[in-house]
Image 1 (cartoon, rainbow over the protein chains, first blue to last red):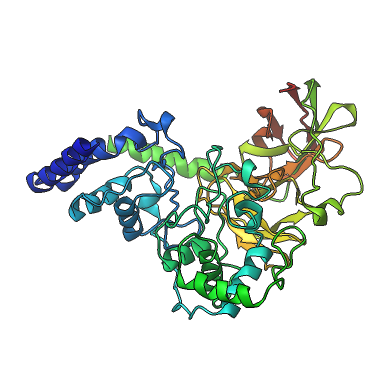
Image 2 (cartoon, each protein chain N blue to C red):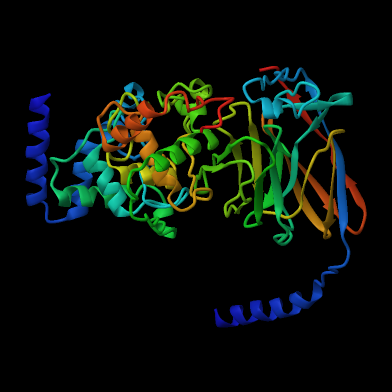
Amino acid sequence: MRLLWITLVAGAVGTAHAQPSILGGTREDFRRYCSGCHGNAGDAQGENADYVDPKPRDFTLATFKCRSTPSGTLPTDDDLYRTIKRGIVNSNMPSWKPLPDETVMALVQYIKTFSPRWKTEKAGAPISIPAEPAVTTDDILAGRALFQKMECWKCHGPEGRGNGPSASTLTDSKDQPIKPFNFAASSRFKCGSTNEDLYKIFMTGLDGTPMPSFADNFKGDDAWHLVHFLRTLQQEERPEKVVWQQWLATHPGQLKPIGPDGSGQ
Amino acid sequence: MMRGIAAMLAGLLVVAPSTPRVKTLAGSVTGTITFTGTPPKMKPIDMAKEPSCAKEHATPVETETVVTGPNNTLQFVVIYVSAGDMGTAATQTVKFDQHGCQYLPHVQAMHTGQPLEITNSDQTSHNIHPLPSKNPEWNKSQPPGAAPIQTKYDNAEFIPVKCNVHPWMHGYFAVLGTSHFAISGTDGSYTITGLPPGKYTLTAWQEKFGTQTQDITISGSETAKANFVFKATPY
């Protein structure tokens, strides 16, 4: 494995400096780093695709999970760049951080040649993200109420363990089974590890998956409240969890459970 | 060469006024959609996990992939003009509701670009997840009491619609390049009105059994007849 990485990095550095024509060299880069899963034609039919779960992205559809743009719109170049550099947790998409920035930027342009949508549509306008409010008990309680009201628990489970009543029935847009995110088992989210990355997922949805956008129905700091509540479900000792556990310790028995009969309060 | 072009242009000038179209004449086509063979048995839907929807139904609800009526008729078949006069895009809003954890109607047809309004009449959250292949794919949550989703589709295709929260919910948007369309009713019948005189190809689409076509000619204000028979298979 280490040998593979050395080869990859050495190859990347070599091409970045040796190629006068960016797109010509980029096709070589795509075939070297991406085609194995995504296929030479970007259609997710690479030779490894059968063995990969979740399936590789099909670039001919131009549907992407990690975006800063509204559901149904094309992502920005920066969104695609960040996905390549970061990788996607709980999938076979690794982080390509070792690749030089210019190689990744050129790959972003190359990925955009696989669907005609990129010729007729512009990327969506990135959503605006208000400043993150301070973590308070009221704010976490509001997030918990939203987790109940928006029925997040139906897929993600009452404790965020990815085991809600609908979890076992979920399929992605290509009819492949897909698991809801388990908050108790992961520190990183699909599209990054910060609170802002989680905020974006609620407001943009993960296109191509069952995760919808809540942008039409979240007002004010709603999405921030939900971010802070979900942080309390994780294993990590985070500020949200400290505030929450202090409140729980001093208010025993005050919460109704989340679920079919729960009020979320 | 120049003379040839001049002659052609002269010919066009003569021909053009000789084909007047009487716009006011409009015929119709009507018919019934039936099947032969054995259609698949529809499965009962267990809504026990969603009590607010279960109580909306006095009798158990079944899946709607193949909905049959008396005398082997088929409901929810989309019949539309696939060649001929395509009409003009309608501007009135097409509605699609979620009620009792079902889509009303199960299949909704619309012209490309026609406004589509999606509502949730249920006391539970749905996510509307249409799965197009020629239009952008989006997926939006719609909690109880949420504002309607206003949208439209620019490219013609049959788009499956699902709700990931309630896996039994399935429907279709039939996005068509024509305003001449109808959906067969509970008795399998349909009528398309407002067809100007001319030759037409009609296509009938059923989500499980595929498409069938038939050519008709409308010469005046008559009502043409076009029945379609689908070959049903149990699986």
